[in-house]
Length: 304
Image (cartoon, rainbow, N blue to C red; front, side, top):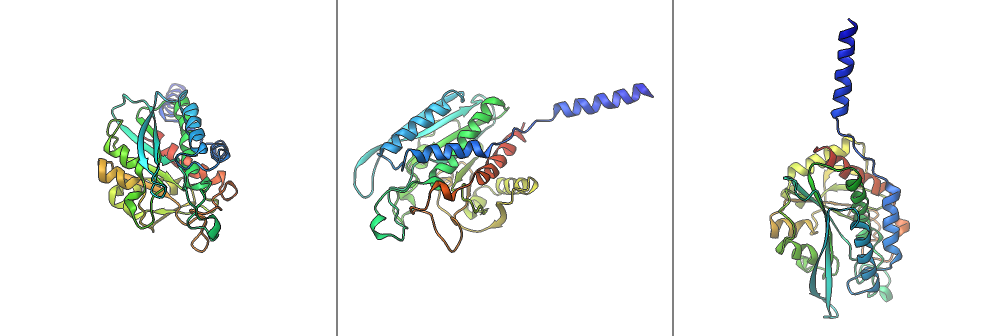
């Protein structure tokens, strides 16, 4: 009888040892990346803050990833007609793995606060704590986790430039970085992509974005289902907005079935901080970054 008991204990121990341990995501560490980006000021293309932020990303990612590269391209600013060099940033983890996925966010900020109530400030650049810094903050924290906890699949972290300087009413004047990336794919074609945008809102409510569901319904259901299992209450399993974001060029131009995780009502349906001077650190939350980062970590490491 004792022999059988020992065998049962051994089998349970062996089964436990085979289970993948899911790393913890630190929302405070991610929030520190958000604050650091905002300390550079607005990161609109061509600005001092833009250059400092690029250097920051490369300094963070280079010691962590298996490969880090920039993808430079030239774009003409729509109002000034000035030609500015932009840079997508790509960090690869386990690039030789058979299965490759991609997580992305844009790092530039809006050159004009055109949705601001103040007429005098509509032509000045915004800080972009949520719209720009939040998604990148989660990806920078994920880079440390991926480095410290090697995984079987290939993960490509991509920071898009020139997402946010477009003209209202002309969707394809936005997302220039993801358009260039999609036309000149610098990595093996990933199985799918998850784009993070405006996920730092202190009043987090992330609904299913409708274009995402059309492009990759199974991934949408997997992600929002997992969020429910993890009790991440910022995720709402209901379709809401349709939004032209970086996930659209990825699918339309490169055939990558991409999903957008975005809280478009910032902070809610009645009040708007998006593309205004209220898009500041004080209106963002480490808890929100923790929820999104936790979902990404569980999604990645559940695939081992």
